[in-house]
Image 1 (cartoon, rainbow, N blue to C red):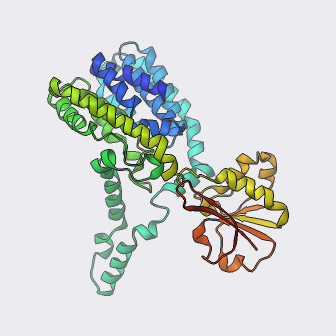
Image 2 (image 1 turned 135 degrees about the vertical axis):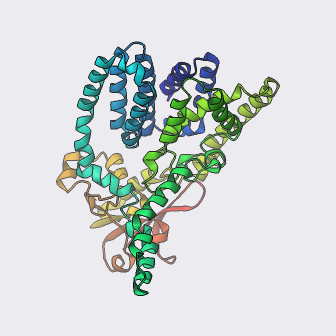
Image 3 (image 1 turned 60 degrees about the vertical axis):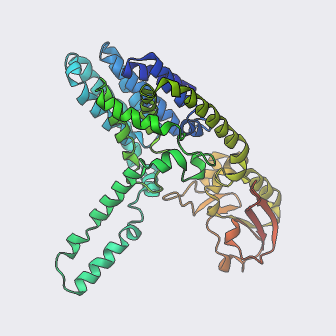
Length: 431
């Protein structure tokens, strides 16, 4: 996170040729709720963000010293391995960079060819990763095409109605491809929803209570920055805008939108634009801006350290460590222990906290999860699948561990783990 903040200074200075704007952009990223949320817990998307920022800065330096083009390709190529969204965003950004600076690149075409060859070599193994079982499972788990029936269900119903009435062109009018296109466009523009960006988030894990991806005081500077950048025809304004408008593309065909992690690359152009926009506000009002920044940041820190651990403990899997050690203390009393997959990747916590032998785990079948639905995984006595109460209650010498909603209210539990806000998190039911 800190390295990315430092690189933000060098990148902004290289783009805008203004040290004060570079310092402001660096400050904005350093205190950005969006960036802090994922850098503090080491999301892999944050590593990708650093590599992208470094790669673009090296590219711009390479326009003067071509040797930097080769290092730029290395950085951008590595970003493809660090997270999923750069695999679409980085190639599009790379094509944009080549187009915008094609005249300068042609002067050093030998280095460009070397850079292209190096990029192909570095990215070639990625094809095997993306086409592997694991790669396909990841796509199945996050793609809108996985549950295509529910997405195009209404379209199918309308086709059937039209066909029964003998109306022609039913398949054309209600074509499922139009449904996918509409869904993709909605997903794209949802990431520019000002309410989501500046006022309220959508997933608890992606923001703190009452604070969204960005501070509300940044909105006027961001808007002014866009129009001022275009009006003044800043030298590299096309790069900033292309970066901003390309960043949401990796999320358009995925579920759970808008998604702050998959479009984390948006944070860079937004803060650069905000830093640029400040220069077009009256200097007398900057004192007010400084006060807003200071108090908004203090409010963010208060929400982050005081309220988020309590209110959002469910989203951060609170109680999983206690669940594992409680189950371990009880396992000798049961022939089998069923741990519900409603507890979100529950098998991972048993592997981690028990320091389970990887060879033994693989010998038992390993992780058999298609599309993130780990229904057949096993760790010793522990079996991970959804709880079927009507069937499971007939069994004997079995311990069920699951979410409260999976058990009838009158069920006798031997232990309950609560979230920090007092809500029930995990129930242990003995049969």
